[in-house]
Image (cartoon, rainbow over all chains, first blue to last red; front, side):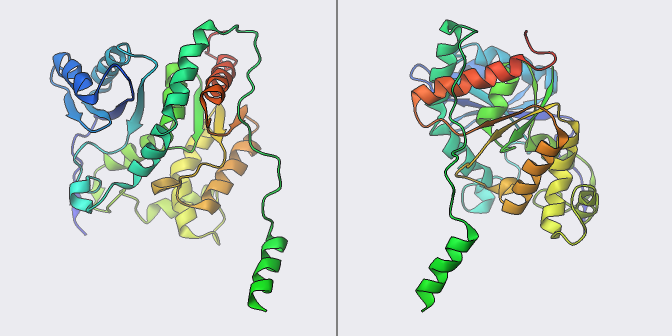
Amino acid sequence: MTAYRPRYAGSVTRYVFVESPDMTPSDLAIRAYEISQGVMIKETCFGLQVTGKEDDVDRIVGSLRALDPAHIFVKDRGFPPGDPRRCRANLGGARPGYFGHEFEMGLIRNISRGLEAIPGRSPDELPHPPTPSKEPRLDAARLKKIIESQES
Amino acid sequence: MAKVFLYPTTSLILSDLVARFGHKPLSAALQIRERIQTAGLESPPLQITPEEPKKGLRWAAVEVPSGVRGRMSLYGPMIDEAEAAIIINNADYSFGCMGCARTNELIKYLVRKRGIPVLDLEYPQNEEEGVEFVAAIKRFLDTLVGGPQ
C-alpha cells in the first residue's frame, strides 16, 4: 500500500449547471473567469466546476447564479476536477455520477418552470406535488407465481 | 439554517433547491470530500478503507454485508445530524454511492425512525408538476427552524 497525499486539501468544489435559452456554458465560463481571482474554473459541457476556498467559491457561485437564477443550478462535488480516479480520460467512459446528472438534467426544465412560477404564487396556496403512488407493486408472491408458471 | 438530508443523496435538484431556499443540504459529496481530502493510505477510488464497514456497525448489524455497512459510514452520520429530510421516491437512477437497494431501504427506515420532518415526493414529469414540486419544497423548508416564516 502506498501513502495517500490529497491534492487541493482544504478546498471545496462545486458544480454549476446551466440549462438556459439565454446562456451557454461558455458564456458562463467567461463570466466566471472575469471574477475568478485565482479560483480554479473548469469549463464542461454542462457548465462549470469551481474549486477553491469555500468563501471564494460561494462568492463566485452566488454571482453566477444571479445571472439567470431559474436556469443555473449548483451542487457540491467531492472530487476536485481532473482527479484521475474520476476523470473520464482515465476511466474510458463517463464517470458514475454523470448518469445521475444526465437523468436530472432531463427534468430540470420542469424545476426552472417551478422557480419562475414561485414569486407569482400565493403563499397560502397549498401545493399538490407528485407523491409516491399507492398502487401496489409486484409483490414477492406474485413474482414467485410468474416464475413457476415459466418453469412448468 | 436547518441541516436537510437528501435522498437520493447525490441529487442535483434537491441539493440546489435546499441551498437556494436558505438551508444546508447534506449530500454524499460532503462525506466523499472529507475522505478524499484526508491523508492516509491509498484506497482508490473513493478512499473507503477497511475502517468504514466497522464504523457502519453503528447503523447496521454485523451480519449485514460490508458494502451496506461501508455505505452507512457515509450516510449514517448525515442521518444522525439531519434536522429534516426530503425523499424523492422511485428515482430511475441509482449509480455510484446510491447503487445499493438494501442500503437505500435502510436509509429510508432510519430517516423515518428519527422522527424528523420528512417530505416525500416523486420527480416531476411535466411543467405543472414542476411548479407544484418546487412549491412543496419551498413550503416545507420555510417551516423549518431558521427558514423564513
